[in-house]
Image 1 (spheres, rainbow, N blue to C red):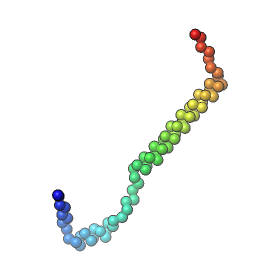
Image 2: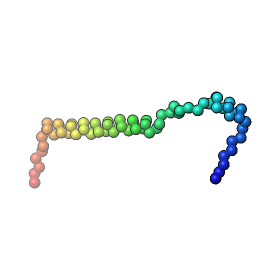
Image 3: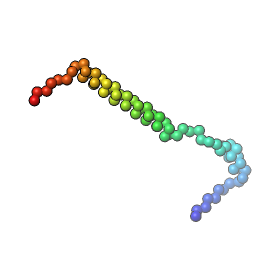
Image 4: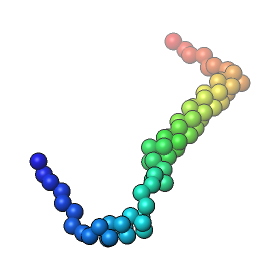
Length: 70
């Protein structure tokens, strides 16, 4: 298989390790951000749908249905 060789002196590795310590990343996962945005958008769309249905229902109650001639 392939081999990986790192060139450099041990002092340089120690200097780099002291300047840039290894730790947990502090970034936010993009999936969490987009998940939160998508969740809000879905709730907004469902709420707007129910509001539109309620307005149409009460409008029909207020005006009544028109009779059709056959």
